[in-house]
Amino acid sequence: MSEMENNKINEQQLDNVAGGNDGRGEGTFSAYDITPRWIRITASELNARYWPNGRIAKTYKRGDRLKVDGITTDGKWYRFWMYDPEGGECNGYIFKAYTELD
Image (tube, rainbow, N blue to C red; front, side, top):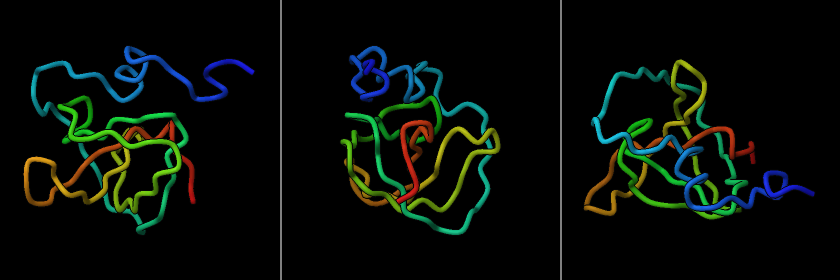
């Protein structure tokens, strides 16, 4: 079985699949509401970001469950409500390709 089949990826690959931090800030993206559903992380680790392709908020591990309530219009990122490591609560975005419905 290949590393990708096992979802074992190195740090650089992890940053790429989670959107990378281009340093340009929020950028332009749109998301729409979906019926809330539970997903499970399938990668060994996956970065959650404050916005797609943005700054990393926190990292989740394989098996972690999140309740998502939105998806970007390109269908690549789930939106969810998270506790912000910097304080408070906010929306976060997680790369959909390394998740599955729970």
